Amino acid sequence: MTSPVREPDARGFFGTFGGRYMPEVLMPALEELGKAFEEVRGNAAFQGELRTVMEEYSGRPTPLTACRRYAGAGEDFVLELKREDLNHTGAHKINNTLGQVMLAVRMGKTRIIAETGAGQHGVATATAAALFGLPCVVYMGVEDIRRQALNVERMKLLGAEVFPVDQGAGTLKDAVNEAMRDWVRNVGGTFYVLGSAVGPHPYPVMVRTFQSVIGIEAREQFTQRHGTLPDLLVACVGGGSNAAGLFHPFLDTSVQMVGIEAGGTGDDPGRHGSSLGLGSPGIFHGSLSYVLQNDDGQIVTAHSVSAGLDYPGVGPEHSQWKESGSVAYYRVSDGEALEATRGFTRDEGILPALEAAHALAWIFREREGLAGKKVLMCLSGRGDKDMETLLEGRV
Ligand SMILES: *Cc1c(COP(=O)(O)O)cnc(C)c1O
Image (cartoon, rainbow, N blue to C red; front, side):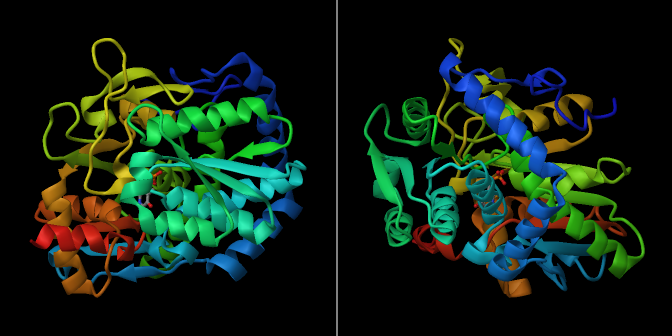
């Protein structure tokens, strides 16, 4: 195992992954964003404002909850959950959208755009835009709009315009392209809010930094309660933002880390969302990272029962962690995640998001090997949004 690269180089590479594979016209905007981000990173006033908004609006710090029954936790091993489900809007995504929209305000931008697949990032972005009084356009594929009617309505209630994209298959990939086109046209006054630790530099490092509040808080809370660091961190990986936010503040320790991808319904292309486990390096969404692609380098559709893990790429920092051996990545099937959702809810009285249920399912699978260990897991979101899927699974 080589030691991980902690920060990207000036061109945005974590080792060999990352970079800026973007149209020339957007380079100045990415430069401007990179500079603005570096400036606020060490700016006490901005960080103080962000902390206040997190506390007073989103409910941070989120607590750690010790499991009492699930998978033998509480008896055979310690399992502490970092409760990102208790954030305003029900998941960790708000940590990032509040940070980016506050940065947009500071940069003097007057308009917010985003793209969304399942709608969770769209809702989190529309929420932050409403809080700061900025107009917001969310690009969304027509097929996704049809499947995610509730989130579409929620975004509209929040004052966002949901722009239907009917190109291609009408899903996330097409919405990304349309959002990029908007940014090219309106680059001066518009801020593009990305939803995970993906995309061209500086987005991966910026999103991870805003999400690092998860790991910074959890490290302090865990050591206060147990007098020691955990043995193992576990988080689900879609684009990789909640996992990177938990892991990064522990990179200076010997704590083991495990990321769980969507195993879907099998290992064949189109059946899963395991970019790290089953994909290969390629360029997608503006950076070089592991992606799901065919022999021609065309992006292959991802599948997962959980909408948030249904993404055909992964953040470049994770690709570097995979190659350096800093983090181990495994996959969990749709069926295992659904089963874990039911078991965990009954055992602990918490309905987890299907994304987070993937991490729970892996813990269940490995429960014998975890005897005597102390585990810290990111419960990235709550499962109310998944009730329809859970009802379908029943019949
Ligand atoms: C979006 C989402 C994820 C996946 O995104 P990451 O960037 O990998 O964290 C995981 N859990 C929940 C609840 C989500 O909404």
